[in-house]
Length: 95
Image (cartoon, rainbow, N blue to C red; front, side, top):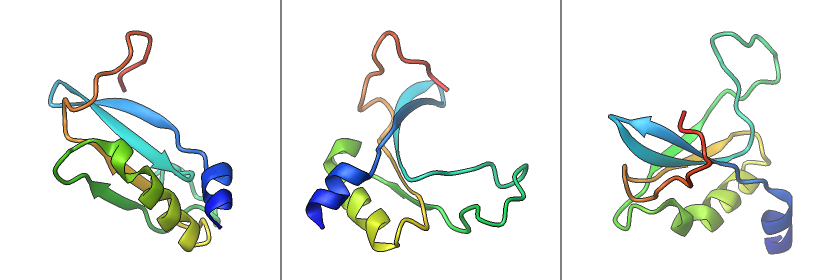
């Protein structure tokens, strides 16, 4: 199961602006715009958590993958770092 979690679960990372501060978000599993998407197979739940002290999302990657896998990939898992704990690469777009 560990190999399946590590190999089969993409974990895209994005940066958002949170009150003007670069903030990293890890997204494990697909997510759609619930307001504008009426697809019957869209996720009904988003598991979203804010990191604890270290505030750095990478510490939580194995947990997020395991949680996503344990829900049979039905519910996306997002992890947000503390604002300013990760610096976006210069070529990375801030959403």
